[in-house]
Image (cartoon, rainbow over the protein chains, first blue to last red):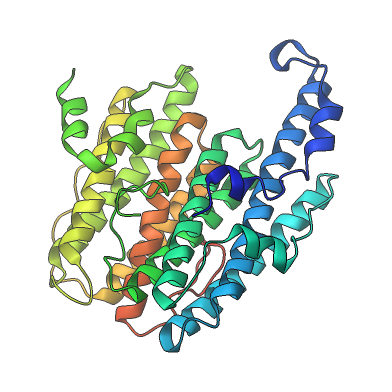
Amino acid sequence: MLTRRELLGLGGAAGSAAVIGACGGNGRNSPPRSRQRLARALDLKLLGSALDLEHTLIAAYAAGAELVHGGALRASRAIVAQEREHARRLAELIRALGGQPNPPRTREEYARAFPRLTGSHDALRFGVDLENAAVRLYVESLPKLSSPELRRLAAAIATSEAEHTAVLRGELGRTQVPDAFVTGRGRAG
Amino acid sequence: MSPSRRELLRAGRGVAAAAPLTRAAPAAAQERSDGDLLRGLLGVEQEAALVYGTLRPGPPVPARLFREQSREHARGLGIALRNRGGREPRPPARVGRASPAHALELELQALAAYHRAVGELGDASLLPTLASIMANHGQHAVVLRQALRRDPLPSAFAGARVR
């Protein structure tokens, strides 16, 4: 299983140049323009991490596509279409904020980072783990995002990823909605 | 420890996510505004608990589980509301027996309400908890859509009015 650091470290540099460029102010005591730059830099960093994770999800579903069949394959296709929509929207926002979205890594790079998947159960289980990582990222990013629009987007995508876990858990024959508070850290996984 | 906090701790699974709900917001004006939002969300949860209480339990919709989850949300929101000086709305009266379609409609209203609230809330420490509740409602909607033989994932961005 990939560690969170590995997953989120698959890129995350979309906003790094902007973060460095914004250094020099110290938040509360810095003038408004400097604070705005810092906020924009943090937005870019968080959106960049989210985009990297969306790319990872897309690659993971592609890697598992040969292993799943029937309803699980249909579900997987529907989910990956939504991950692509998330990635498109995040890339648009990064550009709008003056950043440069990271491209996906190569198939080989993802394959080296992924666990060995030997069947449908492995592929679905890996999907649940990655979706939970995405829920965690979006939920924990929310208070750090600077605008209501970005917060709404993060909440909407977190919910979408949580919906994916419900579909995948159903395909695995598990309780689809195990936790009242979906943080991506639930005991049920 | 206040009784309400004890209640929350008894809720078990929701403790970690609901912990920020026990913090008070810093500014009085913000408390009023956030209090209104929390009161509205609490009303949605009360109604959801009522609807699932009138839904026939068992497959394909685990109505009892969903009712208990809505009650967990309501308990957490109630604590946050009281900490901001607000009063919980009176629970709605029970009317007839609900259907999965009715429950889905309510879940969509809940998603829209939380989606609005995360953009309006002043106290950022509450945002992860509201998002974690919103995500749970999204999962309820998946199960209900599957029960109704509808597309379980009609939108990549939950919170918009999608059936």
